[in-house]
Amino acid sequence: MKKDDKASISLIKILGISLVLIFMTSIGVMASNASLTSVKIILSNDYEMTVLTSKTTVGEILEENHIVLLEDETVTPDKQEELPDNKTIKIVKKTEEEQGIAKEEAVVTTEEILATYDTIVEKIVTEQVEIPFETITKEATGEGTKQNQVIQKGQNGLKEVKYKVKYQNDVEIERTEISSTILKEPVDKIVQVRTVQVTSRGTERTATTNPALTASSSLAKKVEGITPTVKTMNTSAYDACVKCCGKTNGITSSGAKASPWYTIAAGKGYKIGTIIYIPYFKNKPNGGWFVVQDRGGAISNNKIDIFMSTHSECLQFGRRNLECYIYEF
Ligand SMILES: [Zn+2]
Image (cartoon, rainbow, N blue to C red; front, side, top):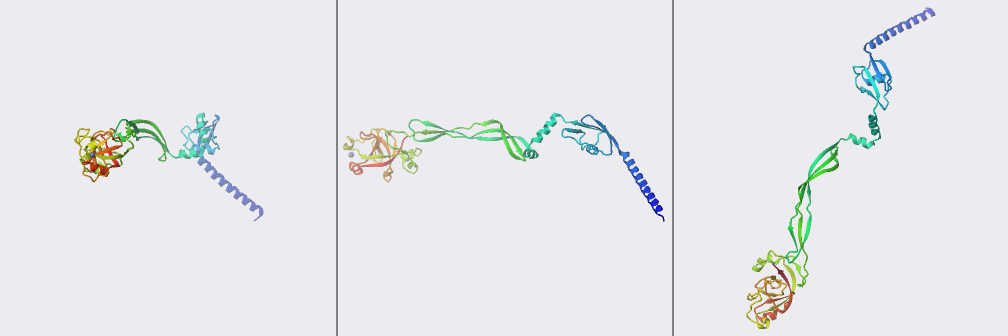
């Protein structure tokens, strides 16, 4: 073969291959032409363009034509939507309102963005809340056997409170009281306070125990409910003799006949009928329980005289300071 022949064969081959390629391309173009759609795109500056496309969604068509939406532009229909029946895609500037929202969103902090991912739920919650009672003290006047006394029990009240509660991921994050309705008013506790009276009767204190509760004497039974005061008294004894009383009938100033291991003479600070327990005499026939039945000229409020059977008994007893439990009523 000649060199020229070789060249001409090659040319034919190239032509042949080219023809085939052209043919195939034509088929391809024809094929695509078959599904091409004419779409009108209106840009935000009102410029209109018509493009042919085989794409079906708005976003794809824009991309194909290298149309990029600016930050302040929006497209109708949305990018992900299918081409509408009127085959028109319209790009417009966002309204100021939309832009404003966009700007606001732009300045929120990372924390706020994260917070918006958590669902915040607001609920109106109604709860019943106890209202604690108050304690009021009232000063008592006059004589009394009790130092402090509760004269009215305290009771908690109840109110119904409405709150607006914010929950984030089911956790309460904020609570605001909206309204409150009292269902039940609290009742004040009232304590009557009796100030310790300073009298000429000398130092008295309230007993911590009440001997009447454990005594069998009938006098003790009468005063079980009374808290006694305790005082140390200068104690002496007397009987119905002339030396002691100037008379011998044994009639006391209360009018009752004096009885040993029962009758006591006391100062005017103690009313007739006051019951006095003297532990010193607890093994005597009266168990130590006496009643104020008599008065005596020489008897002050810090002294008592115990009525005994005989003068010698009185002398034997002499004079002693004894602790006395005084029951007044
Ligand atoms: Zn006497």
